[in-house]
Image 1 (cartoon, rainbow, N blue to C red):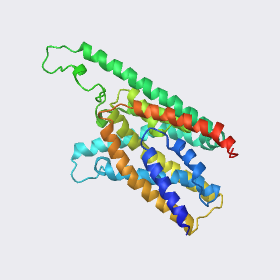
Image 2 (cartoon, helix red, strand yellow; image 1 turned 60 degrees about the vertical axis):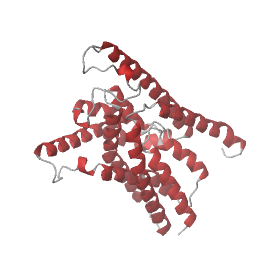
Image 3 (cartoon, rainbow, N blue to C red; image 1 turned 135 degrees about the vertical axis):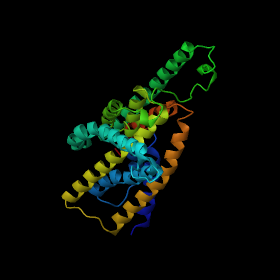
Image 4 (cartoon, rainbow, N blue to C red; image 1 turned 120 degrees about the vertical axis):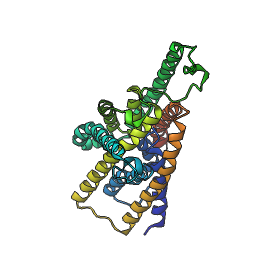
Length: 309
């Protein structure tokens, strides 16, 4: 077993665990990492590994939200169980657009759009989108503040509060309707373009459809469960159909990557859920723009100059 490959796998698990949940595109980061972190594995295994490693991140959601997602929890009464089943129904509805559109286009997107220039473009475009949407939300917040009756004891002026405080018509995960869930699912289809960020596209959808940042982020976590399990299963099946197999080194790489992605995701999700309650997404927008420029600069200037292109 190659110890260096295991170290590289751990690093990739770290990158995956952080970037899968923050709306900054795990694909954009993996493309850069791939230029500098090469493992002694086949192309088939590498392509599968980049998707299956996401299962570690998904398991962290299952652990952190186990009670909320478990309809059989003994501490839940009849109403709680019905609410949980309703949540799962909304998750399934939200995944329908990605299943209907994404599955037929999976190979096509990999072949024609999985390159540094598409990724860089998507990073920049959606970075600008995050900044624009949060600016619009800030303006909307100011309008709501001006409309509130100032004499009412319950109508504290929003302008006196933190300008970045979370707000939205849909302030609880239970308030998401099936229609809203489907709408967020349609935004998830945008993540078929590499560099968009699955979490980024669904969070943008949630914000535009009236969710608070916290609710948009949480529903994004839940939507990832069936989507990533399905994507991982699809990659494994394709890997096996090509007659490929994994030896001890590949199994070691896979296990290390999954474990590290799981552990790092636990911390990343906890951090993000706290961050979005008091801060907007503009910082992620600026980061995406900067990363997109770095990706373009590397592949257009640095790599050709070093003879790596």
